[in-house]
Length: 319
Image 1 (cartoon, rainbow, N blue to C red):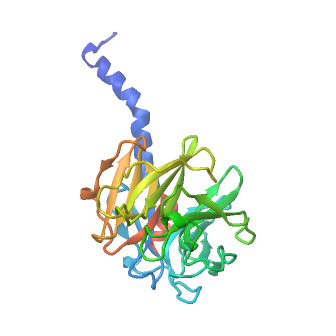
Image 2: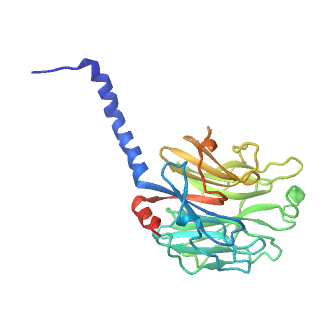
């Protein structure tokens, strides 16, 4: 007997069409865990991690204690920790070791628990007058199988037109080097200069181009201190002029981003109010501010976010 249910025909078809999307979303939710690396205080106690499955509620790991104490450079700090997964299966981390050093810190790990010996990378040693090497980040390029390491530095007199527009003596630009093994490096080059004081770059592959988040560090004559976006067809640039600010009027720094559950989730440190902010976007053009829903570890400072598997997280959460 042929029984027909015309009343439910269209509804059933709609459900069947949506089923792959719903299953994918559920898989992403259960099989992917977001990990946020950050520092507290001045960075003297080292690496902190927090996790989230929904990108909004973040819980500190190890009772918000440090997972790795800093051990390189005279100041022995671990500020602005940035972690990426490399083609070799390791997690690679770089960080700021000092307020006024000519290099950065580096270590690697298979599980985010056990880390290699910490190494000092003298990426600005060739510039005798350089004032600092701040907020390094690392990006793995699968096509060339090499790592882009980039950071902010001030070289006095290098960009005289904006020497008086920043905080005190600082007038930053973004520099970079490439490596395949963290032992040999290409000569340091200039990655981003669009005629203003810029720090805290963070780069992502977004479709067929690269998107750079950055902080306009201009203080004078009109304070900026906001997050903007630049794009490029090549990882090493040239990158475009910066977009209009996307972070609002509250001073912000340390932007980081991850694609999760169909959105790009953007986080940044509203350091002047001691709070973290969160926005999300499906197209990197229209942003929805979800800061009011964000639950974040108290005192978290300038970090980066990555995605790991549920199996990897199971080991990490037991630490």
